[in-house]
Length: 359
Image (cartoon, rainbow, N blue to C red; front, side, top):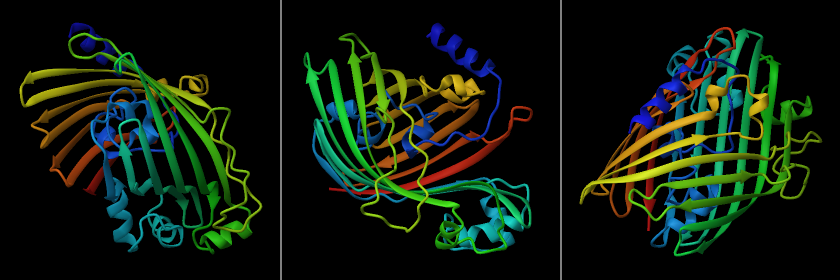
């Protein structure tokens, strides 16, 4: 384990900063583990995280309901300034943000009903994400994304599963607002922003390819690699439109994530999973804060009922807990996200909760 500790402290020593890095998908389990999952994912989220992980599944199961809520540290203060019922609604949240200038507001809601079996999966991701901060009562920077994505994945197993090669096709209907100066006192609903060419909408069709290589040794060391948005995913399609506008979201640029994982069986009903990820290999040159690309985590499993998680994400500590049964799961997690600048790094502490019902 000496090499593991050396690597951990070297990662902490990396210092730099930049704006928040937004990803297509974040889930509560990896967020509790430092957002490391490329080589360790083994549930329905493999469809999104790494389709090769579909080859790890032992049985089939469907997820009927799995609401997930992620809120930043300033959300309560923003709510106290002006109440809202939907934390990702631009028209409700921006007036509240204008009343608390300087506070970075973040919220994400997510559903992923799905059906998966060994080597196959299909799911529908419905995600709303909002990050905003007001400079004054009449100016706010806004990042908003509304995704509805149909995912279909398949995996091929070779050499008794030591090699897994998976593919996911995805059709994404995306609405996006990414502006540095929007007036919260004006009309900030999506149709009004679309009329002002500030809200963009389009449909994109893309492909992810994942690979997992597992060595036939103790602790099952695994290398995972996933290439996302092969050839770039462009949102230039206009069918299945959910909003009228001529503006299209920015393309999802092709990128590669890599990860390592291994498992330790401590007792018959106690085992641990260790994972390390490096995200954005192809775009790393454009990221000033290289520390934001490293993710490290551990999960301790007690009898497939209690799960305790901890990790390191963008120089900040993460933690998570899960209570699981055959049909239900309840999970909570906390993690830190870098939202500062190069001159002044700043942590946004976030808390996540999720309830899942499966069959």
